Image (cartoon, rainbow over all chains, first blue to last red; front, side, top):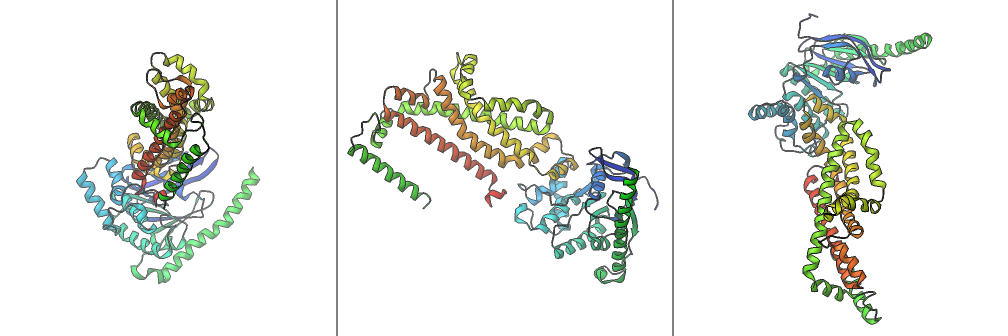
Length: 259
Length: 253
């Protein structure tokens, strides 16, 4: 991996909650511009904390995050996180209005972003008139509209049904190839990580990285889920997570011993 | 049916009341007939109208003050935990001390040259607390992710307030307003009972005055007008709530 000044990287990042509970422990990794990385691990292992730290919502207790400019970061939360009293258009336009963009510029970007997620017909709808999948699409459009260099997604499709989720996974890959953003996608789904990402980072319970896996380059986008390389990738990721169970038990014992 | 049934019940009760007062020859200083109350109202329509206006004005001022101060203080509390810790105990003290007991003090401080100002303050004390607590509750219950979204979108304090906090807290603020609207009227009546009305006479003072003269029909007339003011206040606030929330809020689904 070549280091350029624009590379987003985490250097020995630690995050402590309440000055005692260590959520992230010495995380070091870097992300190439335009890459798609999935971050997997058991729930509560600190995956979301990584994203929140990269986004600047949490300041690391030690170490630093380099190359993450706040202005060109798009963030998609676990829930759609929409303003219920604003329509689709206003929800997508909101961050750009804060940034002081001109009305015509905003209009063009909102329409383009909504087109990317397939909601160009629902500009005037209020969130409560939309299905769960559509709300998530609005949320994605809001993150994309500002044309972020870095797109952070925190288990965005976890609450959706399987069919909707697979369709959104496909759409997200298409959008990524169009928008050429650097994507970090947090998920607890092994299959989703294997399907979406070029690279998978595996975290374990104590907030450390245990594996940095390259995913196979795919020949045929449409049938990737049926290919052997996809299943091999799933197995590799689960192995990395499975090892984790032993490691955690070991580390807890050693911790007790040192205590 | 929703409107017809209560009207029917009302007519039956009034009819029975009119009949029974006449039939049992109940003296009019104990219980006047509905017709006597209506004529008492009609005979002094101008006087009752001006009394209603005085009470309504005090109620309105107290309510407006409570709205501004309650929401304002709730915003300050939501921004500063320290401010909340410092001030909240005194707010509670003001709330739990019976307002009738504070009233004479307020009259001495601000009431000599302007009784109405004292009345507004007394009514405000009664009105203020639910406005504050409901607004504070609404502001605190905002989804933290929405706050994160504002932070990530680099919203300044004013943008955060107008785009997220006030609209999100509006349902709670309006609930507080509905409670406070009724309390403002109670506060205005209690204040007038305790302090008198000064130069202008409100409905509460009309009740005391009529009671002293054993003009029970006038008492009922003033009481009727107080109820009417309360009902108008409540439904006005309900209408405002409906207009503001019907499009998006769960309670109007």
